[in-house]
Image (cartoon, rainbow, N blue to C red; front, top):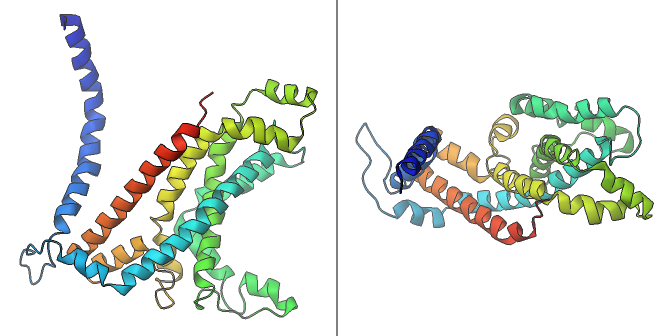
Amino acid sequence: MTRSERREAVAGWLLVLPAAALLAAFTHYPTVATLWRSLHGQALHGKPPSFVALANYRAMVKDPVFWQALRNNAVYSAAVIPLSMALSIVMALAVDAATGARIRGRTFLRVAYFTPTILPMIAIANIWLYFFTPGYGLIDRLLAPFGFGNWNWLGAASTALPAMIVVAVWREAAFYMIFYLAALQTIPPTLREAATLEGASRFTFFRRVIWPLLTPTTLFVFVNVVIDSFRLIDQIVVMTHGGPDNGTTILLYYIYEVGFQYWDSGYAAALTAVLLAGLAVVALAQFLLLGRRVHYG
């Protein structure tokens, strides 16, 4: 290696160093510390926690609340991921000037779609808490003329989790619509003109041209919406507190409950380790299975 090459290598490492230091300090170290903490018990009366090896993981296997939270998370993710992605694509197509339908008030629609993304989740949860209030909430008032009013949407086991899903889809779709809209605006208008000259329908143009060009954005959105579906907590804290009967308890909320209400940091760390391992496996599978189908044009 020549002297100039060594200088370039050193300069490159110096440019990478700040980002690598932040990544190690706020990602790698907390992950390793969490794994190590999961092998220890609960600290009592100011004494340091004792090493318990895999006892927390054995307790997790026998914990019915953990399995219920995992099932709730699976149902929640299976509904939120496809619904929010499909709705975000439809919303982006509706407000895109090149590919959307010729509708008036396109700017107003963009603002309306974008509004949920600028509201904090605490405010969104309180708004929907009013919507779901039995008797005088917006939903019950709309359904009252049809004889379906006065239903406790958040207090009934059959509707509490679906209500959480509705709120999440409403917000997630608005956020990821921005990415799809940005991707749509990079598509050359000449492709649309060529498809029109060939007599291709709007659906054919979307399936044959737009959708393949959106696959990089779709992969990015898919990875992020999967992660978001496992990190929901503020909405549950405001609206249901995990009830009724743990019907809306998902894994991250259970981790919060164990760590900050029961003060069992060792068991909470074990639950966190399982969550991180699951997300890592899902993300790896996404890139291995979907990465080959991504078209970077």
